[in-house]
Structure formats: C-alpha cells, structure tokens
Length: 182
Ligand code: AMP
Image (cartoon, rainbow, N blue to C red; front, side, top):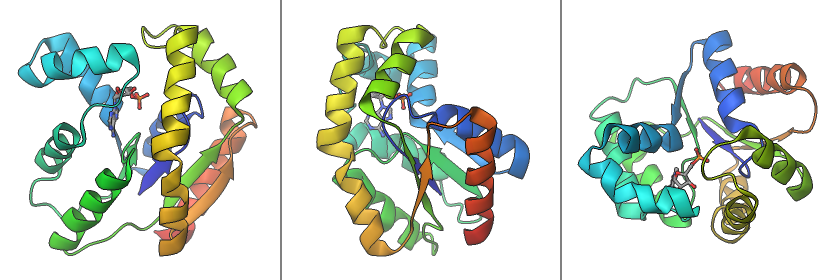
C-alpha cells in the first residue's frame, strides 16, 4: 500500500497508527533518509543537501534504497509513506512489484489544503519545515507528486481520505479503507 498526499497531510502519523492498529509495516523513505543522514552513512551524505533544501532525492538513489529494502520478498504487508513521489518512481515500483509477483493493493490519498499543510508543517519544528522550505516542498508536491493521483486513479487503486479531521477520525477512515482492499 501507499500513503499519498502533500507534506503536512499526516502521512507519517497515519502510517504509524496503521502499523499499531493493523500490524502493517510502515515504511517512510523520509525517515530512512533522516536516519541515514543522522548516522552519517554514504547514502545519508548524498541525501543530506536535498533534504535540507526540500528538493527531492534523485529517483535512482530512492529506487536503490527501496529495492534494497524489499529484497526478494513478495510476502510483505507494508505501507509506503512519502514514496513514490514522482512518475518515474511509481513506474519503477510497479516494475519491482511485478517482478516479485505482486502489486499495490491500494493507494490512500490524504487530502488537506495548502493552508492547513503549511500551518502544520511550520508548527512541527523539523529542520526542513521553515516557512520558505515548507512552501517549496508543497510546490514540489504539486508539480511532481500530485500527478500520481491520476496515475493511480487510472489503475483503479486510488482511495481518497479527507485529512483535515482529527487524528483518530482520519485513522478510523484509513483503517476501514485499508480493510476493504486487504
Ligand atoms: P518526508 O519525511 O516524506 O517529508 O521526506 C523528507 C525529505 O526526504 C523530502 O523532502 C525529500 O528530500 C526526501 N525524500 C523522502 N522520500 C522521497 C522520495 N520518495 N523521493 C525523493 N525524495 C524523497
């Protein structure tokens, strides 16, 4: 599964809750990159400048990370958060899953307005959440990631979730919609 939506939509929060409630593994590429930056690994050193500026890490680097993570396993019950973020990543993910003999069960689009996203981002205090960087990340979302909504709608796997309600109310909807496709 995939959690899709702008930065600040609550993908990380909802992914963690989904893992707690349903035992589905929550995989945030942003978290993996932040951990690699923190640990000073070669991948972290390559990713750091992108994260700090709000720019996307290049597709090749992201796909290498994801492929290493998935390995040869096709039995994983997992939910990506913050991946894929570009059309090329989405197509590459489809190819990887096909090779593993599986496919996406569902893509859950968590929707919030830009105003709400900005309000949330600038109040959480991450180093890439200053006003200018947060604005830029939203722009990047609209330009490069939002086209995936149509991509997945055309595949028939898109499910929409309003993201402006309270955390538990959104989690209830996510849990119910996940149960429908699982
Ligand atoms: P997130 O935690 O999802 O907000 O991601 C934080 C940052 O990590 C992003 O602004 C990007 O720099 C990088 N990142 C995370 N996931 C991806 C991805 N799938 N493609 C490119 N960059 C990513």
